[in-house]
Amino acid sequence: CDVPGGRGPPTVTAEVGGAGLGDGFARIGQPLTVTVVAEDNDEVTFRGLQVNEGEGYAEVTLDGSGSFALTPAAETILRFRASARDRNGNATYRDFLVRTVRPSD
Image (cartoon, rainbow, N blue to C red):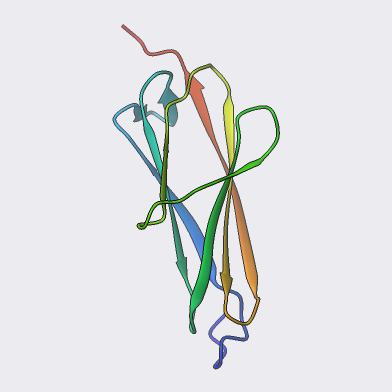
């Protein structure tokens, strides 16, 4: 939404990368990096990420570039919730999944 004065919520996306990511799957024991990207027509004041590895969502700390690194330890579906908020309190959330599998030899 491109409303003057920041009346619309920010947009938020997440970029997932890592050497173990391929064919739509992440490999157990190989690091993943999730970067939260947020844009607003005013000012984004908060970017956040929650991770659910099967025990419920937990807030994680993003580094200065908005990234978080983790190494999957088990075959599972990792659930992520990226969020962003602007200085007017408008918020946006995006949920996405990454399935982890055993590495092939």
